[in-house]
Image 1 (cartoon, rainbow, N blue to C red):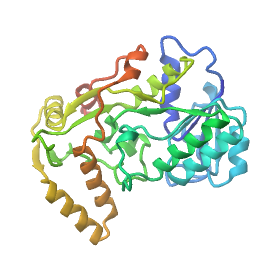
Image 2: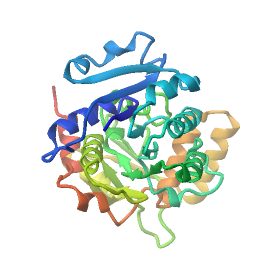
Image 3: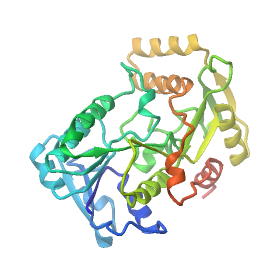
Amino acid sequence: MRLVSSGAFVKLLFSASRSVQTPCPQFGPKYLIYHKATAAFPADWPGGFPGLTSKGWQVLVVDYNNTEDLKFKLAGAHTVISTVSGTAQLNLIDAAASVDVRRFVPSEFGGPPTLRPEGDPLDNQHRAAILKLLQLESRGMSFTVFTCGILYERFAPGGSSSSQIAVNSAMGKEGKYILDIRQRRAQLPYNTLEGRSAKICLTGARDVAHCIVSALDHPSWPREFRVRGARMSLRQLILEAEHALNCRFQVSQFTRTGLSDAITFARAVRDEAREMQLHHLAATAEGRYDFTDANLNQAVNHRPEKFRDYLARVWAPA
């Protein structure tokens, strides 16, 4: 089986494929597809992942705007795991279907897609991707969403971009979501209608990759696999961070009206990065990163890293 992954996530997939207790027997050649040139990965990018080619990976550089190039590079692939979004992912889906890819994993890796409202400012054509995949199922390409909540890497030194995740996103920088660990500050959205702190699910990217690779051995996939390393309220999140880092956070909290006004102001002054950060807080308050049925945790033999342990590890003094 040829597995194709688009994006930096492939490093984690490779690591996971080497460590699963019962590797997928048909997990054969592995391929990485990335954009021809980006700020993070220039045109001569294959050297950016030293050692992959020597360990059986074939590194391919493509242009997501070149349909024929995509088709050529995807030919013979069984499963495509996407970590790109927007038009690039729509083009990837079309190309995969045209060369008879059997299984596609869209770049969702967040909250359950069913919780996403129409007109979502955070959508970035994800809804269009799901609709396209639904339409293409009749051509034999099934798809499964891997829901994992918020990635631990958002709280890492340097933010998730330090792991080449969400490099060009407003959320990829350090301290842009709930916790600013370096400054010991926390900013919470408004409480639920019941007056409680909203809950979120979180998972480390390494654990997500491990579970995806483990799931490859399953003959059939549901519409959605859900995996989490932790589920807690936002207040508990702060307590976990304080315990892991032996510190105290200065906590501020928006009211519902206050957050709405802040979004309006950010839009008025054209501060798109701040607006997106605030929309993520609003989505968190509405429970869009929370779920109870972690069916992938039950399906694979893997114990995810605890959030507290992750923070202690990545913020440990050098």
